[in-house]
Length: 321
Ligand SMILES: [Zn+2]
Image (cartoon, rainbow, N blue to C red; front, side, top):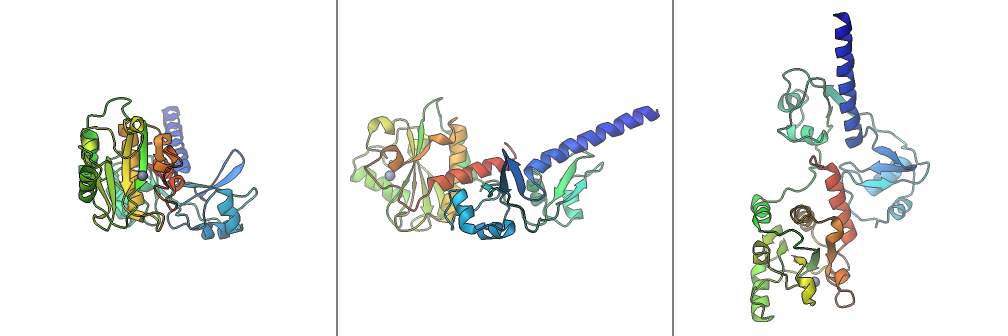
């Protein structure tokens, strides 16, 4: 009897440790991990490049250079930053508060008992609101709001992406454009493409993302070419139009950067399209990268690298991954 109790306790301890190890990877205690001898900092909500530099006693320009970044690049929770060799946190943050799940506990009860939002509790532990938790499982209690992995796509957009009759291997590239105008709407683009460019299928892009001038800031328009899985009309080479989805962001990105909401919508849309079309991120490109020498589109202030990095860190944080 005694022996059996001991074995069961040992098993429960092991399980608790296994859970704890999982959380260590998702929510490291200090924000610092080491991969292949390069010290890394995992960005948390509210982190800034200068704040991180101060935390490790390194110069902000050195940190930016090491990570191939600009000083004003936006950091995203979950993003991994390389640190100079030997960098040590000057003031390590305390280990996060944790609780062990008891019998009959659920996320709502635990959140209420600790005065945190239930969604923050779920996100901090890589769970969703309907995840089942087990006695003995250790949960991190977040100290504040936790960033969601991705701006969720509006249900109508998600449905339109799911419902289109996408054939296997149909698409090879996802090409990002700007409108090169300060305002714009799908209707105006459709009229232009039909009447001036003589395109019988109208709107040359599969998706348009607004900037608040002519359509909502971050609003995603799903075009008929996506719904009907028609080739794009957004590239000069017909053989590329056949295999390329086109996304147009309203704005002139030679003059101004895309808005924050446009970038968030773009990343959410790209993630959904990669999954729907069974593509990998290397399918994502820009007009000028795919057809070099002919265009500046989508403008010199649009950073594909930053979008891909955002996509990567969102995936790292996504409960589904
Ligand atoms: Zn273009």
